[in-house]
Image: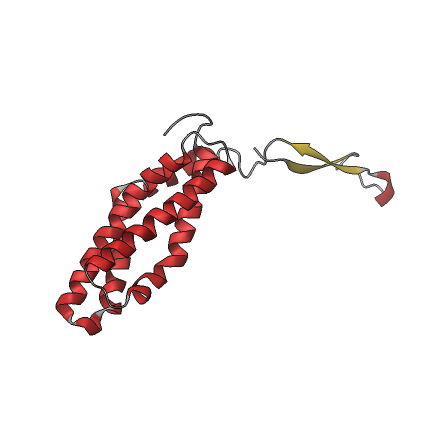
Length: 172
């Protein structure tokens, strides 16, 4: 829980007063109205990120890119690379969130989030490099490059969701 502040002023808002006759100060409050009740929405977002639907949709975008990036290897090989990249991306998205929950473990706050983030990124790129090495993708960097920023953002966002929604001291 963060520390937030709100303005508190003295004086009647209904009667006009001079500038110096009203005192104002800032007092700490435990939560901000904007974030109050957001835990339910964050849990919904987290459940969507954990679903097969999100994994298949995300994998299809990366699979389509892999086909285009490797078209110079011939259409049959490019479609095979795209299918392999789609399957790997979808499986990594689905099981990667599960693995990130395991990496988070019973961590508390940022330490668990950092473990989840680094573990998720290492798992993702080790798997992708292995698959593309096995199927002999010529343009591995070109194939993986567009997904680096979205993957880092996804893993960071999911790690932050874990920090925000995971009960402390509870194993996933």
